[in-house]
Length: 267
Image (tube, helix red, strand yellow):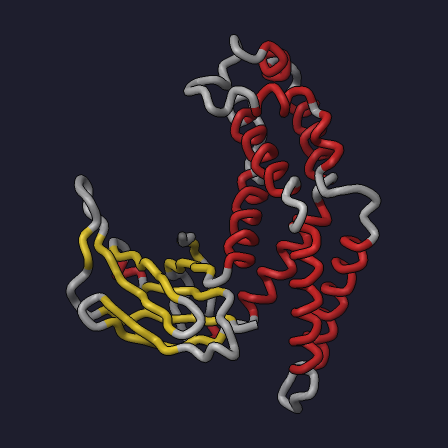
C-alpha cells in the first residue's frame, strides 16, 4: 500500500513538490501507517455530513486498541529507537542537539505508555453510539438515521457540541497518536536517499538482512503524474515496478525507463 503526498525534500535536491509513495517492509510499520491514516481522517472539519466518517474512524481505532499486543509493540519500538539513537550519538558527525530532542521525545512517550492507568481506548468501549454503529457496519447503507435514531439526534445537535465531544474521545487516545507520530517521524527523518533508474519499469535492489528496512519511499517528479509504483520485498531484496494509470481500464505495466528517488529507513 502506498500514500501519495506533496512535500519538501530540498536536502536531496528535489523540486519543492513531488509525489511520494510510502511502503512498509515490516508489519509493525504497516500498522503504524494505518493508524496514522485513521488519525489523519479525524483532522477534517466536523459537520453533519462528515459525522459518519468520524464515527467509522473511531471504530477503526477501537479495533486497533483491542489488540492486546499494541501497547507492548509501541513500547518495544520506542525502546529500539532509543538504542539506535544511543549508537548514533557515538558518531562525531552526529547532531547532538537533534539527537537529544529525539531521545527526550522517545523517553516521554515511553513513560506515558508505561504509566497508562487503563488499556488504550477503554473508555470509548462504553460509548453507546459507537456500539450501535459497529452493529450496522456490515449492512450497506446501515449508517442511515432511520437505522440509528441516536445518530439522528447527534445530527441535529449543534456541530460545536458534537465536535467538543469527539475531541474528548480523541484526547483519550493522545498517547497512542503521539507515540505513532514519534516513531514514524523518526523513520522518515532517518531515511537515506539515492537517485535510481528503473529499466523497463522495473527496479531490484539487494538489501542487507542485518539491517532490515522498515520503510521505503519512492518519489516521482511532476512530469510522471500518471505513473505510480508497487513495491514488494523482504529482508534480502527490494522490488519496485511502475505502472501507468489508465482511465478507463486497468493500469498497465510501464515498459520504459523511469528515474526516481528512493528513501530507505533501516532503523
